[in-house]
Length: 209
Image 1 (cartoon, one colour):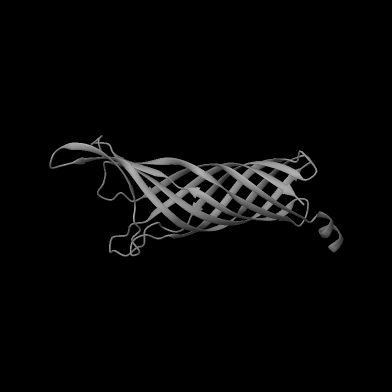
Image 2 (cartoon, one colour):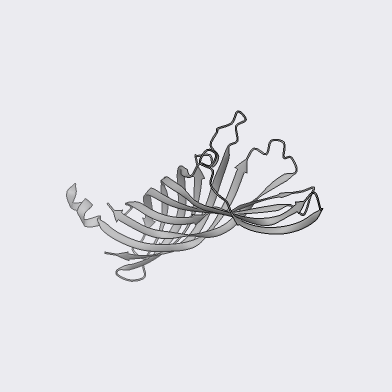
């Protein structure tokens, strides 16, 4: 049993980059004229992978991902908020692959832990005393009582790989990140659950040892 396991074992290290498309869900409660919109941001990171067999590997990453979203009022056009949220995400996945020595398909399945690094917002607002409109750009300060900066969830990815040289391979992958942790702590009587549901697409380059 150990002979085929050792023959197929292989380390690889890589670097990936692409973009994120983040959808934000929340209970709007009394804010019935507010509409949420998805946001596009940057995504990428460092990758390590160990193959036990030709078709089975374990993969770990350290990713920087922007989970952006927006909110605007349908009844008041001058009010618009856009949020830029930066996260460090650390996924661990099982990688299942199939195909030939040059071109292969693969599926990545696993879980991730994450940390909310920073948040900015920009947009348009109205001064109700003077009825004047103005634009703003500001950093959002975290509130330890309200903001949940830790995150965790599940991942599913699908992609293809081209092994174009003896030690080099390139991958294209689309992935879905499903958060299981509300971005808001439930410290009030009225519950306020808010979640990020993120799609990423990236190109990764690997050196195969």
